[in-house]
Length: 288
Ligand SMILES: C=C(O[C@@H]1C=C(C(=O)O)C=C[C@H]1O)C(=O)O
Image (cartoon, rainbow, N blue to C red; front, side, top):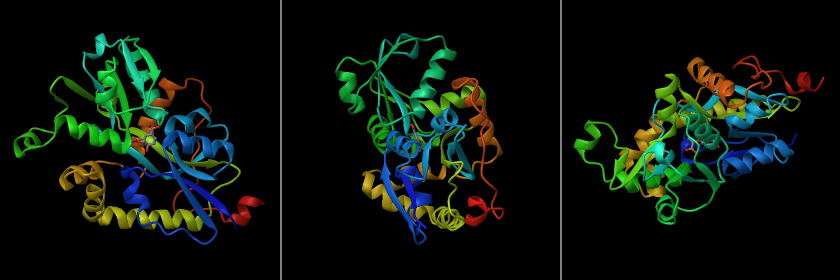
C-alpha cells in the first residue's frame, strides 16, 4: 500500500498532527492551505486537510472525513483583517496567497454589508503592507496569530478579564470567524480532511489520526508550551488559541459549513462524508 497525505501544519492542527504516527506505507508532505488544496486536486497527495471552500467547490469528486475539522464558534485569532479605516471605508485590501478559505469568507462578509473594496494579492506582514498604501490586509495562520498579538499585546490580567482585545494604536483587527458568528450565530469551519471519493484513506490512517487527536487534546498544555516557544508567544495565549478550536466536525460545525456553502458556492454538489467511526469500509471492499 502507498498512500500520500498533505498536511497544512499550522499551529492550529498541532493537537492532531504532533503525535500522529503514520501507519506503514503512508507518507506525508506539508505546506500552506493553497498548496495542499492544489496537491489534493492534482493527485499529488491522496488526503489533505484543505480549505473547506475547496471541498465545497469540488464536492462532486471529493469526500471528507466525517469527524475532523478545524472550526471555531466565535473568534479564531488567526484569520484576521488588519485595517486602518472602518470596514465601510476600505478602498484597497491585500490578500494572502496562502489562503482560499479566508478570501472566500471575506468576500461573503463584504457582500453581506454591501461593501466592494479592491482586493489584491500581496504577500508581506500586515504592518508593512498597511504602510505601503493598503488600508486592509488579510492574514492567516501562525503569522496572523503572531501579528494580532503584535498589535494588541502584551496582555495584562485586566485585558484578559474583559476578553482578548482586537484593536490598539491605529490598527483594528477584525477576526473573520467572529464576524461570521455575528452574522449567523454558527461556528465557522475552516478546514476539513478531504480525499477523492474513489480513493478513501486506509482505516489504519484514520484510526491513527483519531488516536493522535485524543492524545493532543489530552495534553493541550504541553502542545501549547512547545508551540508557544516556537512562535515566540506567551504560553497562555497559545493555550487559549488551541483550546478554542473544534476538531470533531460536530453537528454545529456542519451547520456552519452548509450555511457557508450556500452563501459562497451556490449550486454546489451535495457535500459527502465518509463512514462514521467504527463503520469504515476495508480497503478491499472499497476497491471492489
Ligand atoms: C484557522 C485557520 O484555518 C486555516 C485556513 C485556511 C484557509 O484560509 O484557506 C485553510 C485551512 C485552515 O486550517 C488559520 O489559518 O488560522
